[in-house]
Structures are given as structure tokens and as C-alpha cells.
View: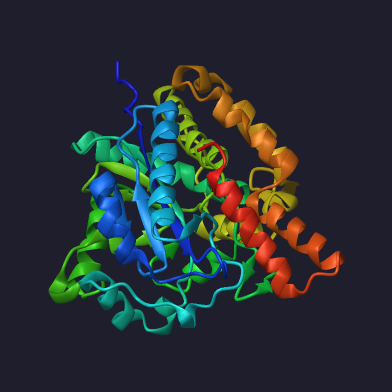
Length: 385
């Protein structure tokens, strides 16, 4: 009998580095890295802009381990920031800081991105969350990664809707719950991944792009320069889910992680029963992604089976029912059922908008209201630490 892949977990989060007086982004990553790496080693990394800092969890066997490691990482980075007179916050865009004021991080990878992409790269003042599911690195694991990726594509907009945390950009209310999604898709090789027939087809895509110089200088073959919302990571033997805005609270981040792991386990279980989730064209799923980015949990996504738009909470009720028979085996029931808390109380984007509008109604200026939003992000990022 074929056993379920390990579905180990890894979480990457990208945080804002803020000045506690102005609440603006500040280019201070190198100073934080110098001290932080003594504590966290290679779990702490620079990002494209010097006002960003990234953490990566250990390989975790379950969501309980993932929660503990994420708390440890957030606490450590918060302490390093405080030691340097800074604070961190988790949201996919900063409420008012501007990309023109940010400094690009030194290093060949970032400088190449800057040179190649120009203004498209300079606008990437965004912060994401990536969840890695461990499958292994043999041929069977690679084939399974492609099969699960093809099926899980359908659910990516549903995950995005739960994670939205970027309603503001450059001091403006954008009208979207995930403005990060729009900014990021100005890069090439982004968005909902294509349907793939095999791992070999994926590898051929990587090879062609590498030969053409799209994945590095001199024909370098760096598949991490394919930025799809879900992608294989050959070096790690993982399926990497990249659709989510970074979650402001630990509880939200672990909920999203548990949901992704549970979806993969359910899709594998269907496979073992000679069943599969129906595969849909990327163009249709991309329409749902737009709806999720625009409206979040307040909107509707298309149920392609009945060809009707259904409210997001109703769709999540169906998904939770679908996942029910894998939750106890994984130990993710409490974390996955936190979806209901998000649906009831709103995502980070919803809370940010509520704070902003309440402040404006109370007579605050736009600047004062956005400071209150940023203060809320700082406080919520620390919750549970």
C-alpha cells in the first residue's frame, strides 16, 4: 500500500522593519541580520528591500511544531528589532510608506532582479507568506508533487481570500483586500500555475527558460525565478504554496498552513481511492483569484461545477466538510476550524479597514488614521508571543 507523503511543513514570512516613532518603513536589515543571525542562523534572511526581513521555519512534522517555531521566530526577530530601536509588523503592504523611499538590498540576486525588471521590481514593496509541503526528492515524489499541484490550484483563491492583509498602498485605500497580489503579478512567471502533464514537462519549461537567460545570467537554471502561486521546489523536495498575503497574527498564519496541508492530504486520499479533483483551466482559476484579491471573504467565487458565483463563507463551509476526514489524522482540526473565526471576525485587511474608517469618522486626518492602522499591525503581530 502506498503511504501518504510526509507533508512536512516549512513556513517563510516576510516582515516590515519599522521606525517606532514615525511607523514608516526603515532600511535597517543589515544591522538586524548582523545580530539576528547569531540567534537564528540561516533562518533569518535579507529580502529585496532593506526595510524587509525574512524568516524561515525549521522542517516541522506537524502544525503544532510549526506554531512553536513560528512563535520562536517572531519573538526573536521582535527582540532583535527592539534592541536596534525598531519594531516589526506583518502585513502584505505597508499602509503609507512608498517604494521610492526604499533602498535595495546588496547582493547579486537582488541587483540582477533590479537591473532586469527595472520599475516592475522597484514597486515590489510587498510581503508574502510561503508554505512548503514536504514530499521527497525521488521520482515518485516529484510526480506526486505535480499531481497535487494540478489539483490544489482550484483552492488557491479560496486560501488567498482568508489571508488578505494589503488593503492600503502609498497611503491610499486601494479598494482591494489584497493589493499585493496585483503588484506581484506585474512580474513575469507569476500567477496561477499551468496544468502540467508530468514533472518532466515542468523540467522542460525550466530548461527552456534557463537556456533563454530568463532564470539567471549565462543560462543559469534557477527554478526559484519562476514565481507561480504554487510551484515545485526541486532543491527542497517540496510543493511551495505562495498565494497568501502574509498573515498578521500567528493564529491566522497557522490556520492557513494547516488548511494547505489538509488540502494536500485530502487530494492524496482521493488519489488513493482512484478519484481526483476536477482540473480547471488556469484562466478560470485566475478569475477567482481576482475576486479574492478584490473582495476577500466578503465576495463570491465561482463554483465551476455549477457555474455560479457563491459567497466565500458558503464555499468554505463546503471545503471544511470536504476536509473533515483527514483532520484528526493530521492533528489539524483546531487550526483548520479557525477558518470560522476568520470568517466571523474578518481578515487582517478587514480589521485594518475598520480601524481606518473608525478613525476617519472620529475626526482623524488620513495620516493619523493610517498611523492607527500601523499601530494595530504592530500589536497584532506580537499576539501570542
